[in-house]
Amino acid sequence: MIQTGKSSDEECGEAEQRMQRNTFTRWVNHHLEAHSSSSQTQNLIEDMKDGILLCHLLEVLTGDVLPVTTSSGGNEESSNNVVVNKSSSSNLKTIKTLKRAYKLNNLNTALKCLRAKGIKLINNNVVDLADGNPRIWLGLIWQLILHFQVETGLSMVRRSAWHQIHTNQQPNGGEGTSTGITTTDINHQHPSTSKLPPKKNVEQSLLDWLNREAIRPRQLGLPSGAIVDLDLSWKDGRLLLALLHRFVPALVNREEILEGGDEPEEARQRAQRAIQLARLHLGISPFLDPTELCAPGRLPCRRSLITYISQFLCLYRPPQFNKNVKLEETLTVKNIQKLTTKMKINNKF
Picture 1 (cartoon, rainbow, N blue to C red):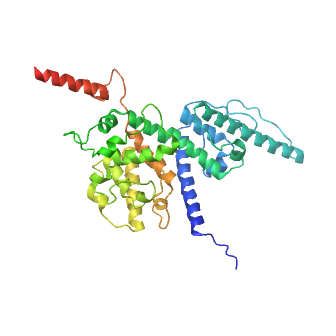
Picture 2: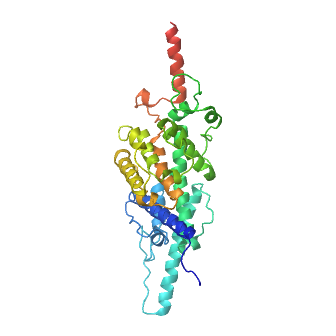
Picture 3: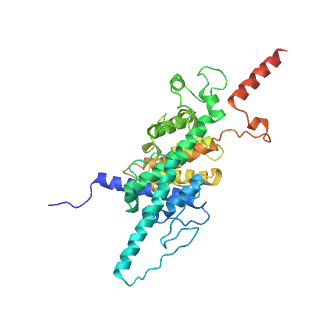
């Protein structure tokens, strides 16, 4: 007998792609809200495959103004409508051909913009995008998230004075070693601050940041002792609460992170609370759905979690060099070291 049912692996794969698509839809709509004249997407791939919303998204992300051709035959700045007699079958074919040309034109405009920003596009061609290939579209949006959010956030963290001070501390340096940095941590420094990391190292860089700076699970007494992944470890919602605790300790105490069981509903409630509080108090957009995150029997989508967690990177902002800003708000590592040396010299006299 031929079995037509799907295997558990296929079902898990579909659930992961569905979670990824939902997360990416929220991410896209979050940015499209900032566009002055753009609509939002309900069906991510169907709504974006004509290239118009993609161009609008890139206008928000890059600040550039892109020429967008509408299905009426004109662009958004000037209307040069094509008038066609729709009663003729040949004219209907002409309309279809023109619409296809408009799609390809918009998609080419978007990809050209991305290449100009130095983004290396892999397996992205306008034909697959215009045809609505789900794998290609999800891959393209993932590249946008990596470039404009994740990598930018990691770069900001590495350039911050706070990060440089704490990652350069010696493990036996007396006071100020509360970061819990070990000899292994000192030998395994973050990538250079002069350039962004390769995409293949983004996940490890994010894990390093979470373990050494953002959450530091050993200090919180979390059972795992270290965060080793960006999927399974987050299903019970505890790490989301721990991340929130590190930024706003008054909202969640250590006992609240550790209490409770591991049943799916308890995990969902923890995750939902963390996501809601992060939105209200830190402005972190709720890209994650707690029900999808904590669904039993499958791993959550890693890309969805990275999309959500990487928003916290932007809370580590580098100092702003402004003459009108107070001194304590503009201290860099070198300025702090100079100030410390000067204080020591003054104390000798």
